[in-house]
Image 1 (cartoon, one colour):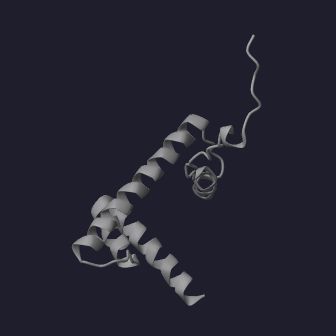
Image 2 (cartoon, rainbow, N blue to C red):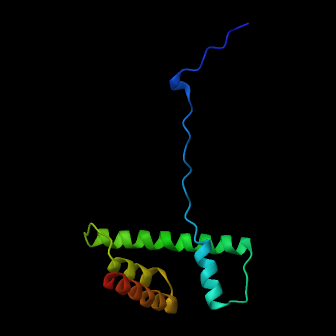
Image 3 (spheres, rainbow, N blue to C red):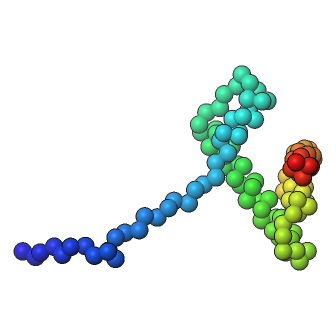
Length: 111
């Protein structure tokens, strides 16, 4: 029989922290209740909506980053985000997003 040696301090396995995936489920639900208070949403549909928002967010981030690099700017400003929104989102959705974004930036800067 072989004796088990006591574990040394260096043998401990480090716990890896899981990369947190951003979830917008709470906000999707709040918006749904503002628009249609009497309608619910299944968990599968909520997952699809969450994936959709994460995908759009990623596309907007990539496009605004590309615009900043193209204009030799080190910082992504609201101007790059606004242009990225106009390029990524279609028609009326882009117009609505730009107006809501402008409203949010104005509210943020005034406080």
